[in-house]
Image (cartoon, rainbow, N blue to C red; front, top):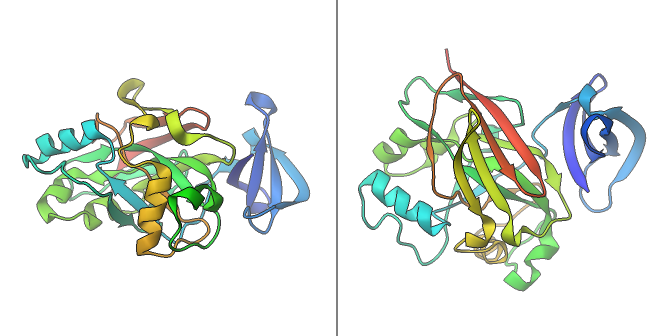
Length: 264
């Protein structure tokens, strides 16, 4: 099932997205998409609604340097040879206020000279959980979505930590929906800027796979329904400029596209 969130002439609702192309429709979910959702009976053509971020997360937990080639790339970008060395997962948070949906603008802040794209696979949590073993990890997953961990790279290097660089409003595009039936073990992930491929990798190259990440993160903090884990970005990160369009595609889910604008 594809779960989404839309704005229609009747307001905002969680929906199930069914069908393809011009025939696609969205069916309104009563209350929330967790567990076994029930439906109100209302539906609209997908072309008649606006897709929003598919979930309202209390927090976005991100994993840094989870592809070996990207870890090496970051060592080169930062000029720190050990920047890619990590035995355990490296995690950080993006605020819920950074989340936007497909089609929304990524807003470049006026005090940054370099804002980068980082295409990623996102994991959406489906139930409250703590201290989840890797063997049980799939039991707490609602589904999978696409994310762009937008980063003010110059501020990341200047600050020596990542909160400001990762935390601006609009710096966490999610969507276009959540795919609940998917094997995430070996999916193609591609990022394009104005149609030019910038990142191309597969989730089979993750250094720490999704069950391991859920075990590691849930040992640190309680995960709540709707929380999102960004599993890491592959090599090929680079700058976004106002006027450009960035698209992240993941096999089995779809494509997340956003435009870039300058604040002010």
